[in-house]
Length: 563
Image (tube, rainbow, N blue to C red; front, side):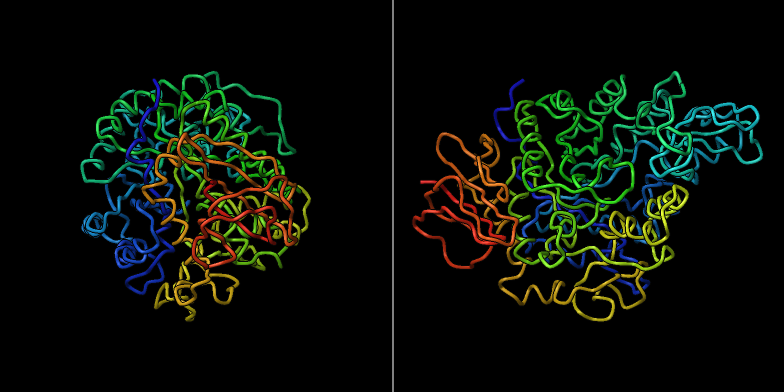
């Protein structure tokens, strides 16, 4: 099946909102749905077209909403179902679509299904989850969870029965081998789609299938455990579940789906996101984890080069082009540290120009751009001085693991400061007031170190700000005359010096160049390029009629239409 015309969702620019940290409307220190509704004009002016909401379902918030206790209720911290419906209506009035985060791999241990499974071992809900007998309270397997520790926890008052969890003990995995469970989930999904949401971002979706032999493997760490990803990530048989999920829900509504599909190999891309794939698109995480040797292990950041970054991006783009699929292109999300800190190694080089260059690289790659709140401001990582200052369960668990592995408290804290998901989850800075205009009360999470001038009000007033550049960039990406070349044109990596990332987007009618220098020294290019400069991150001057480019200034990024 050949993809000949862009799907409707290929015209979107997506903006992820972490509701707890976006905007607080009632002064309780927690962002909420009315707070999002109040900022829709800002989002429309920014130039995004689709909003992705991190989970707002009822939850005890052990993993900040990724532990769902009721799929069909809004958590009171965020408001009410009426607030959700008002947000949908107000967004649609502005031409903004809304998608929701959906967690299908697990629920909260407070979900009524799990509570009933614990209460009555003969209940049908017992088979909604994964329970195993555990003689002498011995874990059934030696698998290590994503957040550390065993994947097995004893049932309260029954230590010889254990339940399985890929993530925390508060997030028991659902048993996708049970067809009755699957039908329950499909019913919930269709209920939300009928409310008018445009689709879903699917959390941890490649974890649904577990090897049913439940065998031990040789340990891969000093704790005597082995990563659960060896037996529960993108395993044989997953495709059967994903195809059924698509046919029973998303395909019936022409909805958009974005898979958080860790572990998908290049040769599987057509299966997952080709013209007949399970999802509309998946995230390309290859370059997001360039700073670590293993994304599931927290260690000191590894060294890497700009050439390696370019090669990683280009390899992924070649693979997705071969598969006739689409990537959701991200620099940041709620699980990652800030892009400016990650991709610009020297702190003194983390400038607005560098933030603009990274934006240029990402937004014009083939695929659908996905921004994360605050990315458009050029936000940095924070620095915290005590582990007690962190909220993120992954940060806290990994700190303890690092200490047990022999790291000093200072070494462990440095790693956690680098990797912590709290870097992205701090409250959105709307102005330079005490709490950044996020709330009139004390925020649920300390904003950490504040960077002067990095807030919405300051950047709206500065025509050379990162925010204004994002607005220009997104307007350019949406211009009708470039739609065909950007949606279905070919992608061609270009030979360039080590400090430069360069690529071409082209079809029979047009050729667009993206050139960027991430270093703080000028660089001579391998070729002379002639054309109209459509956007220059170092200049606000009007588009030229025709120029020759053979050199890039420090941290310069250009988008050029070749003549």
